[in-house]
Amino acid sequence: MDDVTREILELLEDNAKLTPEEIAVMLDIDVAEVQSIIKELEDKKAILCYMTLINWEKVGEEKVNALIEVRITPQRDVGFDAVAERIYRFPEVRSMRLMSGTYDLAVFLEGRSMKEVSHFVSTKLATIEGVVSTTTHFVLKTYKQDGVIWEDGEEDRRLMISP
Image 1 (cartoon, rainbow, N blue to C red):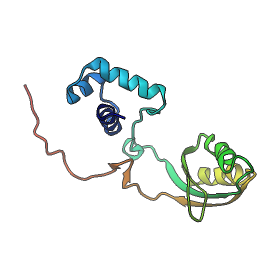
Image 2 (cartoon, rainbow, N blue to C red):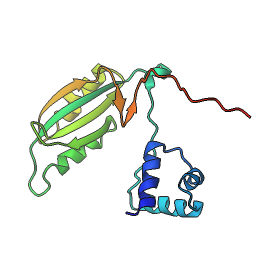
Image 3 (cartoon, rainbow, N blue to C red):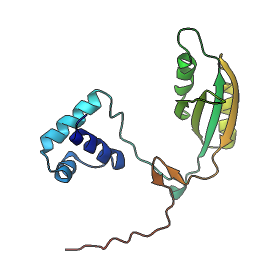
């Protein structure tokens, strides 16, 4: 990967709203080059999607997040993948990782209530063949997510520029 591609990825990782025109100005390169690099990265799935991080509490929406540790029995020829695929296909699952240590999968789940999350674990997750055990941890408060501090408390100290 060349330096320009790396810089484009880093800029988009920090702010997915940047346009190719803005990136071109920031890197002092041609807009067509930026568009071409982004298209290539999207085509080879290096850029998977563009996301918005939302603090739902700020708009009055309550959601419950949980981390569920899952131990599973690996299957012949496919290891953990077949069971993992069954789990990550559920729409409630926001992300999932294969882990080393005392459990195999870290499943991050979002629901409307603790009851809904508990229902998912007991009726959908725990009943999957190959799932040995689960441990559910409910998120009490988010301080930082994906590199973004949730509630910084600092005011914007930049000077307002008006024409």
